[in-house]
Image 1 (tube, rainbow, N blue to C red):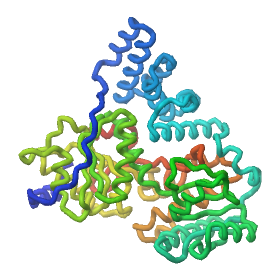
Image 2 (image 1 turned 90 degrees about the horizontal axis):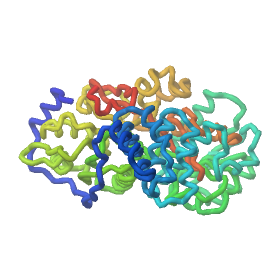
Image 3 (image 1 turned 90 degrees about the vertical axis):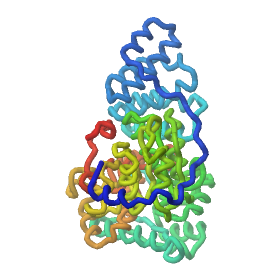
Image 4 (image 1 turned 45 degrees about the vertical axis):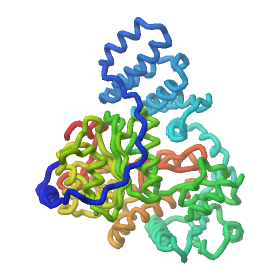
Length: 502
């Protein structure tokens, strides 16, 4: 991770700067034992059935950590989960469903996620993860997808040809809305076809008035609203008048409204994916750095809950001031003592930061003798344009991003991107900082025209990631991973490379 630019920056660091604020100290959880899984399996042969099932679960967990997916899958598959305690059944379900999805075994995922029907006590994020995997498995097997499977009988078998887009043309969200709308128009033009795309100014009408006008225009469905509060209002209804693809997520734990679907660029989803990846790479004790604002608290909580749900420990959690220098926040995150990081209980770091701040973190870690600590991050540290000189300081940092922002890392080149023709037409004329929103507009259009067959929504290779439909109508994204090398996002081809020193 060392770079000459980093060394120059590190040499100028001032030791006494404003400290990042530490979160409430996390509780310590039991770590997975370091036994040889083969020895554990041998022990299980001599144990009573209940203890043997638990021991085999521990062995499967260790195999998965070590990258032996097939062996871990076979071991987990052979466990009689009914012999496990309720907490261990949840652990088994999370492990077996993760392995089943990674190995493209949807029937195994359905078996694992049957724990959802048993109403076992589990955290909300664990329930969400299992529901997402269950939805994927049903889609892979062309099975109905719970509450949404009969949600749109009025569209079944029809071509989607009349869409109303309801986005604000004035107010605080107008700039975002205009970017999304422009991308939709461009994609509509590039794609061609018989779809009629009409736009309504959502800032001029109430929600009920928008539906009235859309129905008067004989719309088959609505794309919008964008405002989070309005989406929250809709999801609390029993139903909405027309099939609706909202471009945000409501505040509720789940969406209650029939015909309402929700899609957006969720930073919380990215944090949860980072937690899963770090766990898959074998890390168990992490430090985290998030900004001290509402956005940082929401995303940090998502990472925290997902990490603890898997059984991991947060050693240090730091809320930093984005306007202050990085040094003291890193000192707190890495237990710096005597200008040296103390990493005996830290395997890796989760970082939520914008580019200018993020670029200072690895050089500061170098300064405190922690150059090889793995860093997992969200898309927010990547500006989406080639800046090799600036991004040298992010070398070896692993992050998720949408395929359209990292084409070489995600799919092997621009020509292989989803909706490549639209990508080319937008890339030539767009601001890099707005490109994710443009990709979101394209995917919203593509989702909408598939509403007559909801199975098409599962596993859709979109501009913003691979898209999946939850049972409650919320759509989430799986994003590709990249790692900065020589200032350029490069692919991470297989899980486990994060701790292999590639």
